[in-house]
Amino acid sequence: QVQLVESGGGLVQPGGSLTLSCVVSGRTFREVQVGWFRQAPEKEREFVAWIGRRGDDTYYPDSTQDRFTISRDNPKSTVYLQMSALKPEDTGVYFCALHNYGIYYYKSSYTAWGQGTQVTVGS
Image (tube, rainbow, N blue to C red; front, side):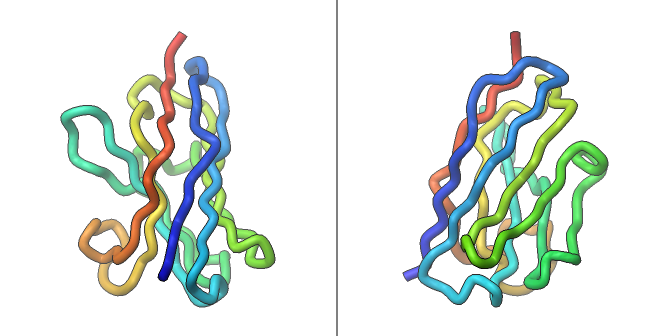
C-alpha cells in the first residue's frame, strides 16, 4: 500500500525560507511522479509544484514559479519542496500526492495523498 508522509512545516517570517519533505513508500520510487498542493482555510486545494520520474521535468504555477523548487532524491525515496521569499498568502496545509495520470495540476489526477504539514507565514 502506497504511503506518503510530509514533514518540515512550521512558522516562518515573511521573506523567509522553509523546506518540506515527502517520503514515499509502497511503490518503486523511481517510477512515481509527485505533486505538491496546499490548502488555506476555507479555500480550495491548489497546485504548487510537480516533478517527473527523472527529476529534470518540473512544473509550477505562476504563484510559486521562481520562489519554490521541487526536487527528488531517489535513494531516499523523498521529494523536497524548497520554498523561499515566503509570503503570508503561502500559508496553508501542504500535501504531497502521487500523480497517476492526466493533467498534473488537477487534484483528480492524483491517487494517494499524505496527511499534510502546516506552513504558517507571519510575524
